[in-house]
Image (tube, rainbow, N blue to C red; front, side, top):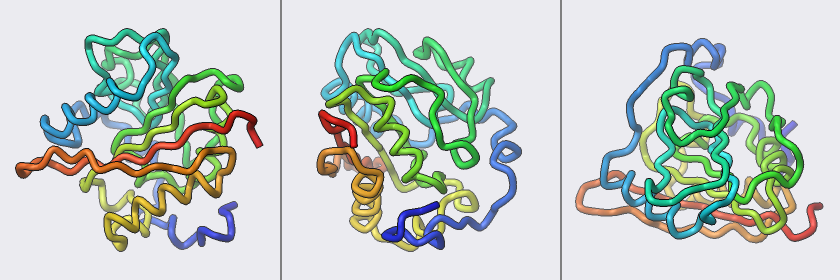
Amino acid sequence: MHAPELPPDLFRRMDESSDAEFYVAPRLVTHIDDATIAALTQVYREVLPAGGAVLDLMTSWVSHLPDDVIYGRVAGLGMNRIELQHNPRLTDCVVQDLNREPQLPYADATFDAVINAVSIQYLTRPIEVYAAVRRVLKPGGLALIATSHRCFPTKAIAAWPTLSTSERMRLLQRYFAVAGGYTAAEFVDRSPGSGADPLWVVMARAAAIHA
């Protein structure tokens, strides 16, 4: 159930049919342009620990991680097995619909970072998911959500198209606050400009002692 601070109506969608059916066909495309991908890769280069264990949440065939950085593990959780199998950065992968099952299939304190790129608008149970993210993060581990302005409109939550950019970012910060066990979430605008897609990033760290 959603916390009282976040009414369930926020998470309704135009298309409530099976997400598994919607994502059954692989989409080997990118959802932000090249300049914005480069900006996201630079963010990852700056904040993700080299050699660390990273979980790429709601991922597909590309993770946008820097090619020149080696990570000890890059686990991927997404909706389409073919897309995941095409992702060269993944060391292991799981097909899972987080809207149906928000619990993550990983042990406590497994990852140094959990990233989510341009997919957060599709989560209908974000509080449960980010409570699970907190559980699988090591103390002090980083949770990073990167967003832009594109989406599949029928599958995005009702709140997404109705909110301004600043309101969306406050909503994402609220996810961390309501899930609990995180430091105060930080918002940064890393949009490359010059007509490129925007890039907005919200980050928080798992508290040293999990609640």
